[in-house]
Length: 383
Ligand SMILES: NC(=O)C1=CN([C@@H]2O[C@H](COP(=O)(O)OP(=O)(O)OC[C@H]3O[C@@H](n4cnc5c(N)ncnc54)[C@H](O)[C@@H]3O)[C@@H](O)[C@H]2O)C=CC1
Image (cartoon, rainbow, N blue to C red):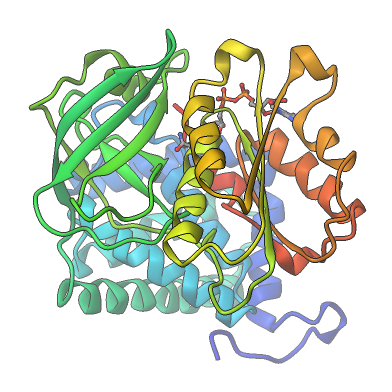
């Protein structure tokens, strides 16, 4: 039990969850100020923690606070919360976060919240936040400690190839310095030597390979420091750092259901990994891939996908370009089917994921069978 369940029963929330949501409603309109004040407090009171964060804090934005608030929001949903926090705790090892840092963060979080939620702040609210933060941090600390026994905090990986496929999309191949176990469909965080402590997410573009190499598809986006460095600057021999693998967009090998996969732009990367994964398990199920891009030229991986289609009778690949179809990827999928016997996998820009979910539900796929990475996480994938 993560939070005490008592009144107020009207919302189904525990008393703590109610007080926490009330604080969050209050700070919602001034979240930017809360974030700035929180970091100001943290770095003034605990200057030794400054080196854990990137030099330019505008890149960091509100990631830490947002993670804490996401956790607080799910206070009454123990299963979701514990999974989320364990992942977060493991992921924090690569930043150099240690157990003794957590109380400092908690104290500054409460300092920032009490200042900006002053009208609803009282001793009960403060006590609720202290309880919630104590639980949150303990789950993270325990998960980090357990992970320490079985995996490094980060991996170093040497770039062995950087193949520019279009003006702004590169396919990177890297060799981790030690075995890197992951599942097809997952993603990781990447730090380049040029922007220390700035981490960005990328999906694995291949299923685990016998040679241990990993591949990523990176699109250089405007003002994207990491993506531009990886696309245009990284050369064979350069060494990047990788965080642990994460994400649940993986294939359920206990069933033989078909897979309906929508990959938009560089979102095709994990879809290609899923196809290889199905092939590696014998390919006893239909896989239908819809690969969307703005123009034909942007279908930078279509040759690979068509080669896979030629090789595997159970795989069908359809390219959909905005230009040619006059409609976007999710709408194109509505024209095929029926899909009600399929598990669906969505990967691409947040707008595509949102409208893709609607289109797939309309096509009769149960919500529980639609898999995609968190849109919020994905918002920081590309920059
Ligand atoms: N590099 C990687 O490993 C991964 C990247 N991603 C995400 O995929 C995205 C790829 O960006 P780009 O290549 O620039 O893709 P893009 O913006 O060119 O869009 C690709 C496709 O998505 C469709 N689409 C875009 N916005 C849509 C909307 N609002 N509604 C419906 N359909 C829409 C378009 O029709 C197009 O077919 C980024 O957001 C990135 O974060 C996702 C997973 C893995």
